Amino acid sequence: MKTLFAIALALAALPASGAEPGLRITVSGLKHEGTPLRCALFSKPEGFPRDAAALATVTAPVTGGIATCVFARIPPGTYAVAAFEDGNANGKLDSNVLGQPTEGYALSRDARARLGPPKFDAAAFAYAGGTLTMLLRVEY
View (cartoon, helix red, strand yellow):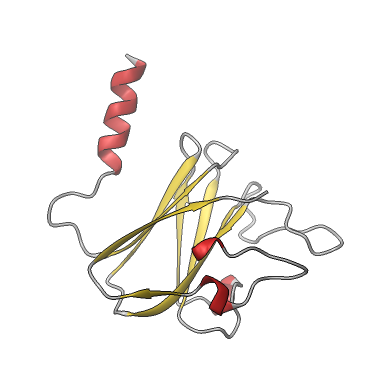
Protein backbone atom coordinates (compact mmCIF):
# COMPACT_ATOMS: atom_id res chain seq x y z
CA MET A 1 0.00 0.00 0.00
CA LYS A 2 2.83 2.44 0.87
CA THR A 3 4.52 1.57 -2.43
CA LEU A 4 1.37 2.38 -4.40
CA PHE A 5 1.04 5.69 -2.59
CA ALA A 6 4.69 6.56 -3.32
CA ILE A 7 4.23 5.72 -7.01
CA ALA A 8 1.04 7.79 -7.20
CA LEU A 9 2.80 10.72 -5.53
CA ALA A 10 5.73 10.49 -7.96
CA LEU A 11 3.41 10.36 -10.97
CA ALA A 12 1.46 13.36 -9.71
CA ALA A 13 4.69 15.36 -9.63
CA LEU A 14 5.42 14.69 -13.31
CA PRO A 15 4.39 17.37 -15.77
CA ALA A 16 1.30 16.55 -17.81
CA SER A 17 1.67 16.30 -21.56
CA GLY A 18 1.30 19.78 -22.93
CA ALA A 19 2.40 21.29 -19.60
CA GLU A 20 3.47 24.89 -19.81
CA PRO A 21 7.17 25.39 -20.45
CA GLY A 22 9.25 27.04 -17.77
CA LEU A 23 11.69 26.35 -14.97
CA ARG A 24 11.16 23.39 -12.63
CA ILE A 25 13.38 23.74 -9.56
CA THR A 26 13.50 20.62 -7.38
CA VAL A 27 15.30 20.85 -4.05
CA SER A 28 16.29 17.65 -2.25
CA GLY A 29 17.67 16.88 1.20
CA LEU A 30 15.02 18.93 3.01
CA LYS A 31 14.49 18.00 6.67
CA HIS A 32 11.11 19.40 7.70
CA GLU A 33 8.09 17.59 6.28
CA GLY A 34 5.16 19.85 5.41
CA THR A 35 7.04 23.14 5.75
CA PRO A 36 7.09 25.57 2.83
CA LEU A 37 10.04 25.85 0.47
CA ARG A 38 10.29 29.42 -0.80
CA CYS A 39 11.90 29.83 -4.22
CA ALA A 40 12.89 33.17 -5.75
CA LEU A 41 13.88 33.82 -9.37
CA PHE A 42 16.27 36.67 -10.18
CA SER A 43 17.15 38.23 -13.52
CA LYS A 44 19.75 40.76 -12.32
CA PRO A 45 22.40 41.03 -9.60
CA GLU A 46 20.77 43.90 -7.68
CA GLY A 47 19.29 42.53 -4.47
CA PHE A 48 20.25 38.88 -5.09
CA PRO A 49 19.46 36.65 -3.18
CA ARG A 50 16.83 38.56 -1.17
CA ASP A 51 13.16 37.85 -1.94
CA ALA A 52 12.26 41.53 -2.19
CA ALA A 53 14.42 41.89 -5.33
CA ALA A 54 13.11 38.73 -7.02
CA LEU A 55 11.47 38.74 -10.43
CA ALA A 56 9.09 36.03 -9.16
CA THR A 57 8.61 33.91 -6.04
CA VAL A 58 6.93 30.53 -5.61
CA THR A 59 6.20 28.41 -2.54
CA ALA A 60 5.97 24.61 -2.58
CA PRO A 61 5.36 22.11 0.26
CA VAL A 62 8.15 19.79 1.41
CA THR A 63 7.10 16.17 0.94
CA GLY A 64 9.42 13.21 1.40
CA GLY A 65 12.45 15.50 1.73
CA ILE A 66 11.89 17.23 -1.63
CA ALA A 67 9.92 20.16 -3.01
CA THR A 68 9.49 21.48 -6.55
CA CYS A 69 8.92 25.11 -7.47
CA VAL A 70 7.67 25.87 -10.97
CA PHE A 71 8.16 29.20 -12.72
CA ALA A 72 5.95 29.17 -15.84
CA ARG A 73 6.07 31.48 -18.85
CA ILE A 74 9.60 32.72 -18.27
CA PRO A 75 11.23 34.40 -21.28
CA PRO A 76 14.72 33.30 -22.35
CA GLY A 77 17.49 35.05 -20.44
CA THR A 78 20.03 34.77 -17.65
CA TYR A 79 18.62 33.90 -14.24
CA ALA A 80 19.59 32.76 -10.74
CA VAL A 81 17.48 30.89 -8.18
CA ALA A 82 17.58 31.10 -4.39
CA ALA A 83 15.43 28.80 -2.24
CA PHE A 84 15.07 28.19 1.47
CA GLU A 85 13.11 25.88 3.74
CA ASP A 86 10.93 28.22 5.80
CA GLY A 87 10.78 26.07 8.94
CA ASN A 88 8.81 28.60 10.99
CA ALA A 89 6.74 29.90 8.02
CA ASN A 90 7.68 33.53 8.68
CA GLY A 91 8.49 34.24 5.02
CA LYS A 92 12.17 34.98 5.51
CA LEU A 93 15.47 33.13 5.75
CA ASP A 94 16.37 33.28 9.43
CA SER A 95 19.98 33.75 10.51
CA ASN A 96 22.01 33.74 13.71
CA VAL A 97 23.80 36.74 15.25
CA LEU A 98 26.71 36.22 12.84
CA GLY A 99 24.37 36.37 9.84
CA GLN A 100 24.69 32.67 9.03
CA PRO A 101 21.46 30.99 7.85
CA THR A 102 19.69 28.87 10.46
CA GLU A 103 17.32 27.36 7.88
CA GLY A 104 18.23 25.18 4.91
CA TYR A 105 18.94 27.00 1.66
CA ALA A 106 19.84 26.14 -1.94
CA LEU A 107 21.11 28.22 -4.84
CA SER A 108 21.33 27.54 -8.55
CA ARG A 109 24.65 26.19 -9.82
CA ASP A 110 25.32 25.09 -6.21
CA ALA A 111 26.62 28.55 -5.37
CA ARG A 112 27.56 28.63 -1.68
CA ALA A 113 27.64 31.40 0.85
CA ARG A 114 31.10 32.21 2.18
CA LEU A 115 31.29 35.11 4.61
CA GLY A 116 28.09 36.52 3.15
CA PRO A 117 25.72 35.67 0.33
CA PRO A 118 27.17 34.58 -3.02
CA LYS A 119 27.19 36.91 -6.00
CA PHE A 120 24.54 36.66 -8.73
CA ASP A 121 27.20 35.56 -11.25
CA ALA A 122 28.06 32.52 -9.10
CA ALA A 123 24.45 31.28 -9.32
CA ALA A 124 23.51 32.59 -12.80
CA PHE A 125 22.53 30.24 -15.62
CA ALA A 126 21.30 30.68 -19.19
CA TYR A 127 17.71 29.75 -19.97
CA ALA A 128 16.98 29.33 -23.68
CA GLY A 129 13.24 28.79 -23.27
CA GLY A 130 11.16 25.63 -23.22
CA THR A 131 11.31 23.43 -20.14
CA LEU A 132 14.39 23.38 -17.93
CA THR A 133 14.56 21.17 -14.83
CA MET A 134 17.18 21.78 -12.14
CA LEU A 135 17.98 19.68 -9.11
CA LEU A 136 19.40 21.63 -6.17
CA ARG A 137 20.66 20.20 -2.89
CA VAL A 138 19.88 22.02 0.32
CA GLU A 139 22.66 23.21 2.61
CA TYR A 140 22.20 23.50 6.38
